[in-house]
Every structure is written in structure tokens, then in C-alpha cells.
Image 1: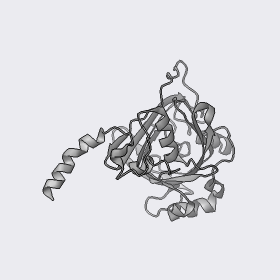
Image 2 (image 1 turned 135 degrees about the vertical axis):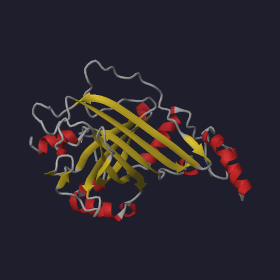
Image 3 (image 1 turned 120 degrees about the horizontal axis):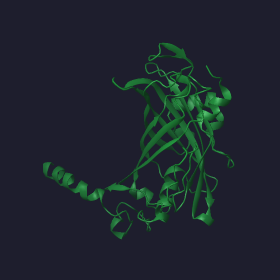
Image 4 (image 1 turned 120 degrees about the vertical axis):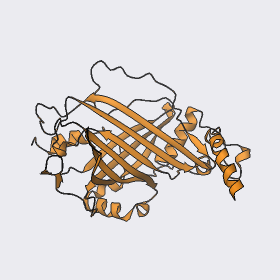
Length: 311
């Protein structure tokens, strides 16, 4: 047993750099693997489409997350403030002329009490010692392209003078260990804040916003490489950095929000965590199915401006 453990340990580094091409040598772990090649843009389009949605015509699937929202303030330890959980429903629209797909998605989420897990209607902000009203996440249209060439997409306008990045082939930094395949996608931007600080004095963190997302995927290589499968389940993790939520009424108080959440997929609503399904079914049942047509994407800040007034 000790010898086997040692051999496995030494083999992991090599496996992590193994070429991600399905071949006859992988027949034991990838039945009918075909030739999914994750060193090519076409292979990456197919793989990410199968992970995030399904290739089946008229089919769709769900994603879900559960974790915590934390406060990061200079000069003190990070604080866990509230729980957060939610889900998404998504489907693919083929774009054969572009060699890929457009992902149409709805996403929603709720902020919860850390002790009871109950959805918060009101919450005492410990930084201000003031009661505020959380604003649930409810984005009815979150569109994303999955194409052989990276196509930049943004919810917010660029800060003046920032150039758009050059187009590059859509080849992602996959890693493999045995039958496990892993991926992390990272995005960072600096943009104009739609919440004008002159008007939204307590809700806006300032004229610009800094936002980052880090999303990881963990799946089985044998399932991903199998051409008979239209969709592949994954588990993963989501890390999100953003300014204070407008409903926290923090204004330009130093610091920001940090989210950390476990993520996974569900082929049907029956596979969603029961608590998430129950809350969404009660409060936002329309989010249990994906969009039927392409609509402009809308971030939560825009919806906040429409539904709330400056404090």
C-alpha cells in the first residue's frame, strides 16, 4: 500500500501535464472517445458547451451554487457576513456560421442568515450598525458566446482609454489527473460604475468598479471525451470580487465584497439541492427554465437602479 501511494504521488505531476487528446490508449477510461482534442479551439468549444449546457436540441440544464459573502476591509480580518445561494438555467443556440454557440442563461440568488440559513429580508450591517434590505439576484438574461475565437463580453462600459483585447483562439488551460479533468477561467475588469456616486451617494462605491470572477470546473475525462454524451456534469468553485453591494449602503467605505461558493450542475430540477429548489420555486419560478430567445444582458446594478431609490 505504501509503495502504491508513493507511485501515485510521483505520477500526479506527469498526469497534470498529459496531452488532453482522446486516443486508443485511453480506451479503458474513455469508451468510444473519438478524438476530442483540447489543444484546439474546436475541441474547447465542444467541451465547454457540454459542461455548461447540453448539445441536445431543445435541451437545457441547470447550475447551482452555495457559499458565503465576505467583507474585506484594510486593517482587519475578513468577515463572513451572509450566506448566498442560487441557481441558473441555460441552453445553447447553435451558431454554425461562427463555429460555436451562444449560451442563453437566467440566474438568481439569495442572501441568507449565516446561522439559520433563512433568506434575509432585512440585515444589520455590522460595519454601520444599521439595518438594510438585501436585494436578491435576478438576472433574466445572461448571454455568453462559446466560439473558436474569444469574443469579449461585458455587462458594464469600459473606462475611457482602455483598449479592447486582441482576439485570440479559444484554447483554455485544462489540466488532467487520471480520469479527472480540471479547468479554471478567470476574468477581471475595471469599468464605469452605472451607479453615479453623485446620485447614489450611499449605494455607489465610486465612479469606477473593479470586478473579478474565478470559476473552476472538475469533471471526468472519460465522460467529456465521449462523443455519445451531449452533456457532462461538473462540480467546481466560484470566487467573486466586487465593490460593496449597493443595498449594504457602504458608499465609498474602504474595502470590498468577496464571494466564495461551491458550484455544480443538475440535469433536472430534481437534482438541485432541495433548499435552493424550494426557495426558487416559491419566489422566482420563472428561473427554473432558460430564456426562450435572445434578450440583452442586464446586470444586477441596472435592475437595482430601476427598482430602488437612493437612500
